[in-house]
Amino acid sequence: MQPAALTAAAQAGRLMTAAEVAALLGHALGWFYRERRRLEAAGFPPEVRGLRNRWDRAAIEAWLDGQLPARQAPPAAHGDADPELAQWAAILDGRAAGTHKER
Image (cartoon, rainbow, N blue to C red):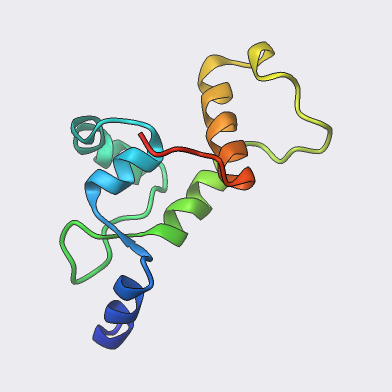
């Protein structure tokens, strides 16, 4: 991103701190710092180039959306799914409905 684009992105609320990223992922900040390299190895977006401790919200949301298999049928009840998958599904369902609360 160019400097003007960085400023615009920051003003639009598109850039997130590590604490905000951790909350979006449903974990504590310490967990995010411990797991960051593993997440990045799995395709998680790195920090915005040229800025320390800033991540692009749209890139993270796109990565999160790609973590669940495409739903071709109505979703099964979350209680029937793998617990980790159910947690991600609940987060994404809440985001889609606009009811997801940051932790």
